[in-house]
Image 1 (tube, rainbow, N blue to C red):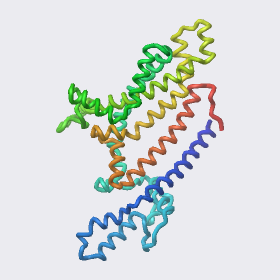
Image 2: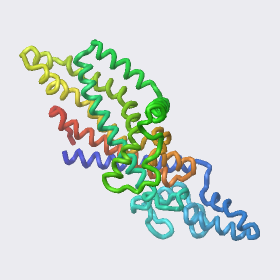
Image 3: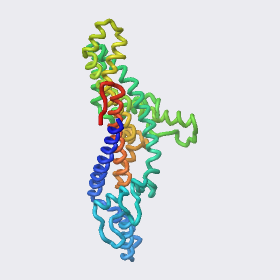
Image 4: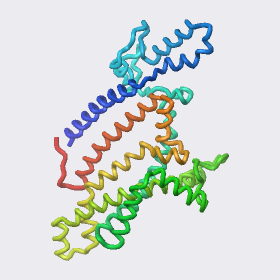
Length: 346
């Protein structure tokens, strides 16, 4: 097990390095130069001093790592290693391995981690609740549909899940806003807290939960179709196994057969869905956050792309790469705990 973990950690590191270079290369192919952009913003101020404008441009190119102190252009590979912190930039190691993820130029030059701190909290807050609600509904519903395969309940759930799965998220969101925020007026249309309020503690928590209630319902509803069908298919396959037929023939209670024997065999594919869904809480819900005006990771990502704020974008991309790689390792380890027949080996 130890050798396996060491190999996988080495694998994660190698893949992370390769993907970091590809991501850095892709974003540097975009025809945008931050130093030129800053200089262009100051053209009017330096209207009578072109040499000063050029000096400003050069100073920013040195600061951003486009050229060295002598004015020589730095190639893309060296800029990438500088960005990682493997090689020195302006005489020191100062990259992501040292905890320097850059600054957000569209947010008053604030450090990237500071910019992402609050949106990450909001994204995790809403996605954790959505994940718990979705799993609490889909797992029992999927099991019931599998056990009652072909019944009216199963048919109704299948029709509803296909409709829900086929509807685009923004259509569902608009429909729910119209029903629950405009017609019935149970929830606010958008926002994260009561305007002008300074609530703290439990009151602040419930106020935030109230404003996130509608996007939470939309996210849960949109996930029900695909997840229910996935659980149902896994359970149907498990219920058709020889060991399940044997257990029934021996007179084992149906509840024990379904929830102890069949569900445990169905957990292997389901765990992939559950862990993948849980890890997805960090990436944000781009459509939901933009529709409901939530300050989350998805909204920050879109805003950073629109503002050419590539330090933020690259940080988010590499974060998603990292949690995906760690998630795959976690799934493999969980397989061994769920099914004793599965063992990881060196």
